[in-house]
Amino acid sequence: MQEEIVFKQLETVRNSTLDLLESIPESDWDVIPQGFRNNIRWNAGHIVTILDLFASGLRSISPNLPERYLAYFAKDTSPADWTDQPPAKEEIIQLLKEQPGWIRTACEGKLDEKLPKPFKGFETIGEVLSFGIFHDGLHTGIINAQSKVIKAEK
Image (spheres, rainbow, N blue to C red):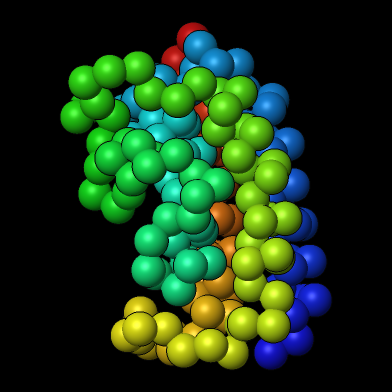
């Protein structure tokens, strides 16, 4: 697998996500628009959490990501279950900005390493990272739709 392509795609997709998130006021981050299960804050935190898991080969989150992110943003979590204040917009944005660098450092030369067990048919860290880039884009699209619905409801 050509590593540079994967890392460049990650940076490009992430920059698009960051541009969108930075344009949305934090007051909109906790609104759950009709027809959605989660809010913008959950989607942004989910992006950083899941890609971190993918970069580790689905073993654990990295020391760069606070442990509490799993409780807030892992698959099948929900803002409805939050009992305390979730991470602030600035914190999530900062982690999203820094993450491509951590991933490059952690994964360079390792994209062909096998996962402990296949995930959705993917067998290597590079394959699951490539899927993670798609996953980022999917949730960026959801964030974009949520933002438009929130604006229309104001």
